[in-house]
Image (cartoon, rainbow over the protein chains, first blue to last red):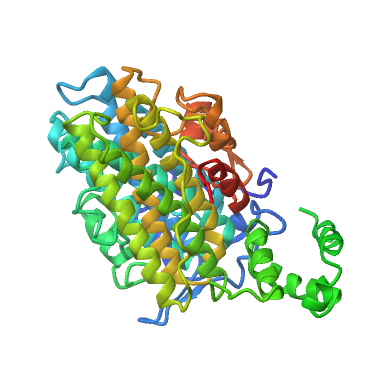
Length: 240
Length: 279
């Protein structure tokens, strides 16, 4: 079942790539142009729904978008989280306990695994490796690091919750479900490190007992300060 | 499950079964139609619906979505009543953080019960009444409301299993965007609860190997009584992609199992909660 046809286009992510090409591919795979889907279909189960006709009509803009774009959206979020925790664990904030260190290293590995999972699944249809700007975070300060971590985890949960409805492939929906609950476990753990008993407080859980579900437009506004290639908020999937 | 076998068994029990269902061929056709709409794991529910119609009982649902919501409601009744008992039992939960934390969880589970009942009614369905529960599971957890460690163990198991149960229903409600989103919004709250309770247990036992996430198919020290609740969590392959050592990164077996929570089917969940249900 290993995706034999998937050959990630590593050349596209190399150091000689021009910013304009980088940006073009990034935007293209987030929906400005038609997207190759061979990388995805190659590794789905034989009995799964074909992706070729998949997609959901966006009632606001009439944009037709598909699972590849949604997976790339998740891929972007996982790249952001992985890069953040790699920074955190390469030089821990002062006062980090051994338990905090080991748990943050576990979270880092989870996020790297998520990132590489999407990278492999998307293959040539994936967006390039992104560079991030974490200059607003003081990595030597516990509160600064954990506040950023809390924001990334809560945002991740809200992003998966808010986009899952648009996924057409049942297989991908299940994978999104498998990941989002782990992000929620991270969020709860980090929240209580920062502020005990905030694991599911009213800033994220409403009076029906429901967690956040944010549209991509909202999510991208939250993560935009950390991106070095700014997505066009008017284009899919951000304008919903 | 072998559908032919089930029909044969029904014939033995009730020779008039096909009169009730028109014809055997028609039953199979109905079944095939259902099968197109729902994944294989939903078939026990779908079958239940078909037989209910056949035997003239008042349906308490208007479709698969309501069936799924009633299934979820059963789990929320279980959790809600469990925590209500727990937080109202004197000298069970230590004062301070644990007491406050379980009150937060209890409140959420109650909100989930009300939300699901409201949603089911809004869809034209009938919320099922709560079963009667035995939180000792026939004596397996005899000290659940007198021993804090046992209470913690049952709580962790309920939360982790709840996460798996909701996850397993996602594809059955995929055609209803609103319900799917709401179910996922409950699902991640259960995961937050699970993380909190697992972390409490980690502190209680001063055991770092009990993590907020599920490692392999480990019960985190609870033991064989809940092994089935964690079976399958040791999966390391997603969409045919092996996560261990993926792309040359140092992703261990523990990492690979922790970073993806695994679903349970309806039938698996019903089997797991059955010992807690009296009627």
